[in-house]
Image (tube, rainbow, N blue to C red; front, side, top):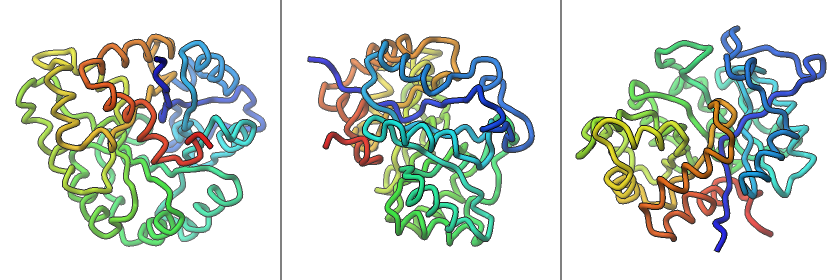
Length: 287
């Protein structure tokens, strides 16, 4: 039987720089978005080739800053197949207003916060639990949207503040926060991640980089992923490709993900490949 697949982490880049001007967060455009951009139409073709049914397209803040127009315009063309994940400046006074605009007016389904990475810096930003962000978190809670956070281990103390203050907000950790999986069993370097399982509103986004790390060093898929599922439950883990950041095609990424996650029972794979995504982004659930 064909496995239903929902990708919760592809990106798209427009070729129309007049309509969608490049204005990256941090002032420096990400290399991948300039060197191997993928348009909405190209993403659809790649999904059709790879057998990906639906996707939650993640706005590229390293290309467009806080202007989510391209994702919003594209999702509006096929709302049954796509959801959109947008970004806003959570420290801005109008953050709640902007969140409501992108959700209620432009029909996007989730928020993403970028606290560390390529065009910003490689040190964890300190604003995540700033009280000035609380109105934005309250708005996300009231709207019932999921919030993705790209962050590293250093930000965990600030994350815990948010988890405890806003327990009804589903927070999705991009790339599992990139734990050092290569250390192998018992995966002591991942304890900071496992510890977060006690927060019921924590979800994990399992992307290509962690899948590949599970085959490096002392790690193996059959020792890491059953442990990860034991800690969090498959219903709190969802797959995302991070296409087109990698050189490989989406088909190659899907094939790789299926091969690696075959160590898990079929029902757990179903959660990771589509059912968790449907809970995080209800617009992607079959009507």
